[in-house]
Structures are given as structure tokens and as C-alpha cells.
Length: 263
Image 1: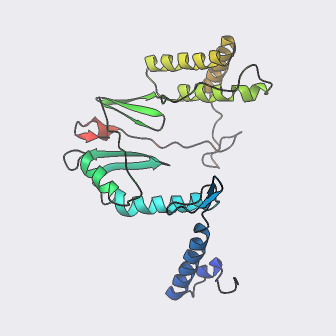
Image 2 (image 1 turned 90 degrees about the vertical axis):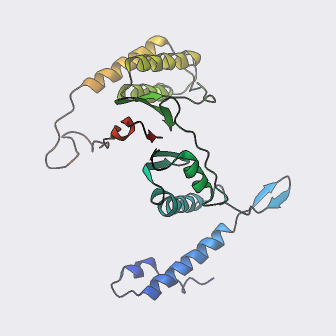
Image 3 (image 1 turned 45 degrees about the vertical axis):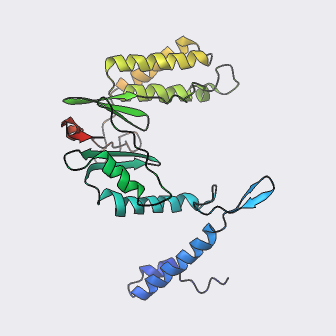
């Protein structure tokens, strides 16, 4: 197929483009996408199959198309039509906070499951003032919100063994992550201690000396408590002797302190 028929995307940025130009480019793009997405074949026991829905796993374009589809679906059918206080998602995990005085879980579930026949929402409602999102559990303890680290029943405690020939930094990478998460989350004293014991248990199962993990936590705590260098006033967000410092949004849980709010 000749590519001379297709306009370059940069032409759309010219000031004299027309609606016809945009429509032509859009139609051509959709035609190309359809041609690529239809090349979806799998082989199983010497038989070749072509799935009737979904996109090809492993295709470079599959992730982009899935993301476009989900964002369009959320924006046009879920976020604004539903009377919710908060809607956020990460890959296939969704958190919805709604007011039970205006809408209930059954209504949300029924509506979401009628949008597309190939999608099904499997909600896990808040129970005992507790709900989970990703690897954190949020506990509603009026008038405050508390969090806890959760692990799925299928989670394994396998990391790179201390007895392996990997470099020490690679073997400690998993424990740096676990300790860093534990220290940076505003965990209650008891939950922090439980998480620390879990980390020690994981390390023991992978043949790490307990003293090594204690020393790692001590060094990370000392580094965390050190005063950061003064910021450079000429570059927002950049420290005087370091790279750009991350900016974390402040999340307010005030809406969940009301009894009619559910997640």
C-alpha cells in the first residue's frame, strides 16, 4: 500500500487545515489501526485461532489501544454519568467513593456491567469500615483514616536468596523497597511493627542474616532523618546539590469521615 495517500500528522498543526483534513486523517488512522489489530492469531496444538475480541497479547500497539479504550470508556460512561464522589483507577483496579444517600452499590454495578458486554465489574465493597486499593488497606477510624499494608493470600515471600552469587546490592533491593515503604507510610505503631516482623520473616526464609536487615533499616532510617539540602530558589523543585525532588499530592480523606460515604 502506498503511503503517499496519507497526510503527515504535522500537516494538522498548520493554521490552514480544515475539518475535512482532520476527518480524512482520522479515517486513515482508524483504517491502519483496524488492519493491524485484525492481525490477531494464536496457535494452540498445531491449530491456528483468531480471537473475536480483545487485542493481540505482546503486540506493541495493544497497550496503547487498551489505554485509549479504557480512558474513553471511563470519561464518557462512568466518571461523569455516575453520581460518585471519587473515581480513580490503576490498570484493572478501581476505587469508587459514593454517597449512599444518592446511589448504591447495586446501581453502580448494574450500570457498569451494561456498558460493554465484554467487561464485567466485580466489586469488593467496604466491610467493617475497611477497604483495599492496590496493596494498601484504608481503615475508617472516625474522625481519622488509617492505612495498612496488605498482601494477597497468593503472595510468596521469595526474593533473591542470600546464598546466590548476585551482587549484594541486587540481593538487598527487595528489602530496600519493603523497608522504604514501611518507613514512609504513616502506619500506626502496631501495624509498623507487624510489617517489620513480616520483613524479617521474609529475609529469614531467604537465608539473610537478621543483623544485615537490621543494619539496612538503621542506615535507611539515618539517611531519612538527615536534613535535606536547601532548595535552589532559581529552579523550582530542585535541591541545591541534587536532582528534582518529587512532589506528592496531598490526599484528603475528610469525605470518608461521614457515615453515608462508602467505598
